[in-house]
Image (cartoon, rainbow, N blue to C red):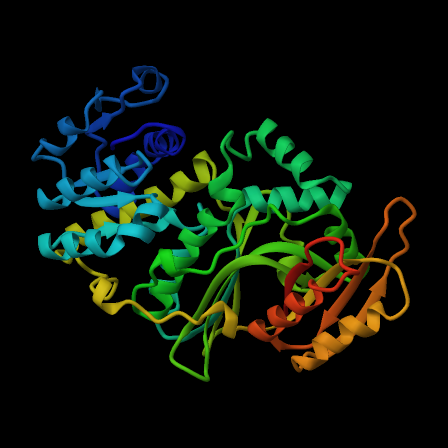
Length: 426
């Protein structure tokens, strides 16, 4: 194992309890032979048994007795080099590195195929939830019609606290950082990129091609205001950072995106709160399936890593090292993604306007000009500013038409702030 931080430490703890059981019940003679981490204090605090501890990944890679390398360094530079070197030496690799799989997966899987060894990555999506195994194995008899997922615990915690306490985004983020749910530099989470990595991986598996992460439409939650949370609740909705994957029946493009969305309070994902994650899959044969659990953390993520260790060991014993090929996850098999402008959705619109006659009619006219039908309107009084919030919920519309209408409205002299646009997902 290379990297003995939070997840790596969890793996060592689970293996210390389970290796004997794996030998007795599964017939797998698994041994933790070497652990590499630059921080010797981490290693000293773990139940490493008779594993050889060192500060260099080279010690692991150079050991010809090692069959499986677990990479838990993180990042996309050193980790990438370590994995490529391990694969080239004929070692099976297990990683929890979502960014690496999403951004460099084609190169890594090609190296795996060339060396005829496996690269497993269950822990890269959903922590302890068996998302990858469910898609690749349990649902092999299905075409997965759609996935809707809450897959970032930091964002879900922030939005949950905003809803529960009326906090601002900044206040909720600060609390998440204090409790260790958000990093000191939280951009990867709150801007949606962490969720985007996971969604890109799942979309690639579901559709049998490569979904390039850098083409994925991604919006974070930094612009969500406390008043949007409150208005959503008043209208019977909650706001979540949602990942959406579905094949559009009208063309060959795959609809894959990450953005805040309003869910009706009776939607099954609406009750997913705090740091918990959920993945709602729908197969054409099995119907809807919900995976729910902790999407991160020491032991949940380590649980997924250990599951991969057992799978790879079974593959080795059975003489099928590449039991599940990933040869389709390649640059020359990149999937066409549906442009966000072509997405059909219902919308929540919050206009900040001067309270005077004719404003509602003017906004409605701009929406009507683009063929957008209004489902409901709500206007709130304001006693401490020169503008009032006006809320429109629309029927299903095309995104580019909706944006054109909003742009037209924002040229009017009665508009005081940028319009808030949030998609509504059924």
